[in-house]
Structures are given as C-alpha cells and as structure tokens.
Amino acid sequence: MPARKTGLPGRLSGQRRMERRWGLLMALPAVLGFVIFTAGPMVASFVFSLTDWQVGGTPAYIGLGNYAELARDELFWTSLSATTYYTLGAVPLVLIVSFAVAMLLNQKVRGLAVWRTIFYLPTLVPAIANVVLWIWIFNPDFGLLNSLLRQAGLPAGQWIYDESTAIPSLIVMSTWGFGNTMVIFLAGLQGVPRHLYEAVSIDGGGPWRRFWHVTLPMMTPTIFYNLVVGVVGTFQVFNQAYVMTEGGPNNATLFYVYYLFRMAFRESEMGYASALAWVMFMIIVVVTFLLFRNARRWVYYEMAGAR
Image 1 (spheres, rainbow, N blue to C red):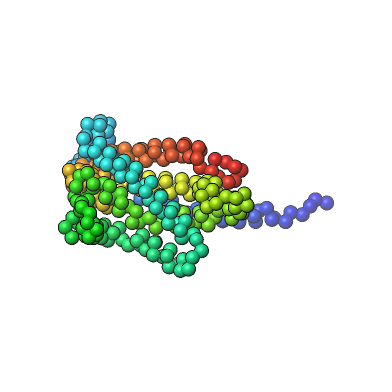
Image 2 (cartoon, rainbow, N blue to C red):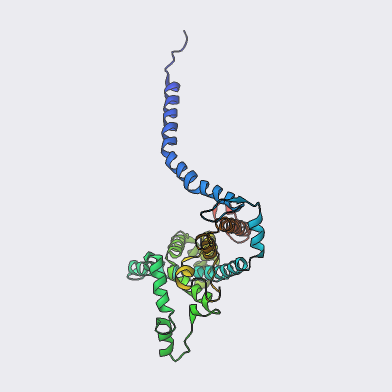
C-alpha cells in the first residue's frame, strides 16, 4: 500500500514563497532609497563629469576634458595638498587623544558615568555651533586662547588668520569632537579578556607591559576601524573652511570639498565639480585599499590567530 502524502513539503514551500515576498516587500524601500538617492546621483555625476555643463545651460560632451583640466588646475593641487596636510595631522592626534581618554575612562573611579558624559558632550553640540565657538577661541584680539597666553606672559598668535598656523589650528580644533572615537575605543577596551592581564601580572609584568603586550595588540582592530573612518572623514572636511576661513588666508585652508562646493555652487561649473567629486572618490578608494592591504602586518584578530 503506497504511503499517504501529508502535503507538508507543499505547505513549507508556500510558506517560504510568502516569506520571500514579504522579505522583498520590506527591503524594497531601502533598495529604492539606495537606487534613487545614492546610486542614481552617482551615475548622473559621472555622466556630468564628462560634460561641460554650467547651471542653466545645456551639457556638452567633452569626454575626459574636465579630468585633463584638473591636472593643470593649481587650485586643485592646493586643495588636495591642504586636505592631505589636515588628514595627516588630525587623524593621528584624534586617535591618540581619544585612546588615552578611553583608557582613563575604563578605570574604576568614583563618578565614572559623569566623567564619560562630560567628555562625550562636545560631540552632541551641532557642527556649526562648534565652529562659531572656535572662531571666538581663535580670535586674535579678544579670543580665549590669546587671553590665556597673554596672562601667562606668552606671545599671542593669529591662529586661523595666519597662513602658516591656519591648518595646525584646525588640527588642534579637531580634537574637540573625539567623543564618538572615544566611545568605540572604550567599547574595545571593555572587550579585552581580563585573564590576559592576570597572566602578565603573574609573570611579573607592570602597567607598561600589560599595555604593550595585551592592550595594544588586542585593540588593533578597533584602532584600524577608527583609522579608516577618520581618514575618510577628514578627507571630506568642509565646515571649518566654509564658516571659519572661506578657504583663506591665501588659500591655506582651501580644502578639497570646499573647493568642489565653490566650483559647483558659486562658479556653477557642475561638470567640473562632478569630475572633482569622482577624483576624490577614487582617492578615498585607493587610500582605503592601501590601509586594508597594510593592515595585515599589524592588526591582530584573536579568532584563529589571524592577522
């Protein structure tokens, strides 16, 4: 007598089809958002980068003409140099400061929650409000920084109003908003196995050996993550140049994104600005690739002893 079919496989198949339909339906808004607001504009900007197009005019196809013009544009190289200078100074400084503060906030002390809140508060201040605050701090006549220097008997400076100190001043300013980086470091520190510290202590190791042989190796994935995010973020620095310096003095703070903004919305050169955007995209891709390629030499992953 043949076995009776229960129909269970058919019901499961129907359930899977229904789950698939609902899954696609739920994912559709995110997919449409990516296509309409991210992928679509990226494709359009690449097409515009191959044209000579001013706002209000008709795009004219010129091939790689905009990219050839970039190589001859002195302001392009100035903006790229200023952005690179800022990145090389701001990223290591923020990493060091935020890591040091995170280690302090990882200690068992009284009022720890209050201290963590205090150090994170500057991150919650709106970006433009932060910039306005630092304009007052850097003011050469009545700013807070020069007032403190004069009271200490030290010479005052021009800070963002002098070509030689403009970018170093903005690099110092970048440490103001290290809260997000600090929180990530703090989460990484709390994930370091305690038994590793105990093993070093049993072997007679002090605080320095615990830091060098346990904390630093175990934190390299977190350091690497913050490094990549920091590099990508600082390459896109904009608010400081837009609000504080307008690219000055003498184009000393003409950051790349601010130059792109100026070409697009002040000079109305949308085709040229699109070419600038794609060059920046390729620079970030190459830098990120090099960081990932080099990470194999120094980033330690505990699972499977992989690096």
